[in-house]
Amino acid sequence: MTFLLYGANGYTGELVAREAVRRGHRPILAGRRRERIEELARELELEFRLAALDDGEALAAAVAGVPAVLHCAGPFVRTVSPMVKACLKAGAHYLDITGEIPVFESIFRRHEQAREAGVVLLPGVGFDVVPTDCLAARLAEEVPEATHLELAFSSEGGSWSRGTLKTMIEGLPGGGAERRDGRIVPLPMAAETKTLPFPSGRRTAVPIPWGDLSTAFRTTGIPNIRVWSSLPPTMIRRMRWLRPLVPILALGPLKRALQAWVERSVTGPDEAMRQSATMALWGRAEASDGRAAEAVLTTPEGYTFTARAAVTCVERLLAEKPEPGSHTPAGLFGWRLVESIEGVEPIEVRGSG
Image (cartoon, rainbow, N blue to C red; front, side, top):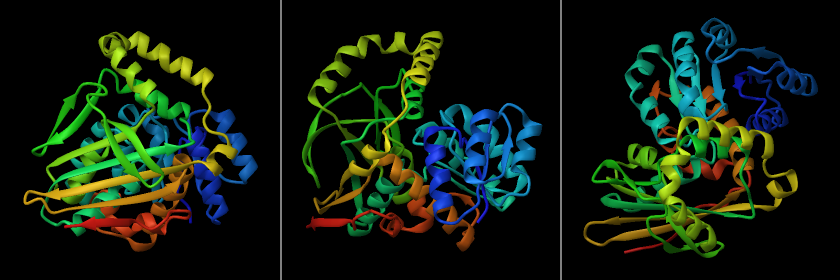
């Protein structure tokens, strides 16, 4: 199987490239930095193409002739538009590993364009948002009349890559968010806390502006959604102390400086951490009459999961040739998608009534 992997020089992009080769595929590596792309392509014996996202001619040449593009270069709020345009023009399916709400919303608005072009647009094929999207779909199946949905995750021994941190900085000054009566509304950072029963034990969590506020709504139609992330109590206290400074941190020059510091100073979890860490997930759907169901799920470490899930989604997209348009992972492939990914334990529905 051949596809274009853009952003292969990044932390997650390289993991995806190695996972694809492990499965016997021959992705074409692409990006704007020749040195790292060429080095990785030489090591993996793969073709590579160079193109900056602001160079329309070079980007069109990079996308030409490929059946699909897996876009791994964030922050996606700044990189998605030119790549989606190039894919629509070339008739290439588009996938990415974003978790950014504005990116999901912008892609879903292109549904009719994608249908007319005969192209599938499938954002969020990594840890953002495959496991939570599938958990949402499973819970909606259990409680079809659900009006409220909660999703949560907890990292058990992992850490962040530079790309993830740069995307978080790009999202400033946003704090939290929720979907309320069908609309996404802002919340203060660390607005409240809740103790949740993850598979690995009870953890304190705070609401976050995770991509499921967009994708789970599209997948399930449930109008009230919150997503929670477990954090140490000390970090939650610091987040609350930082609230008055968030508008200052979001100023353009300071934001760029913070991202430059991340670029110089952060790498990501090493192989030993990726092998040992896991992600624990919890969800609950509730109907207006009080009927509810909870479910839990455990996956490999987030970046390991992302590499496996992204390649799986490319495989299935090219093999199954689904209906063109903008889709969510569970909306396109069903909730069992997550259970087909190596190292994922089956979703456990804990009860309903």
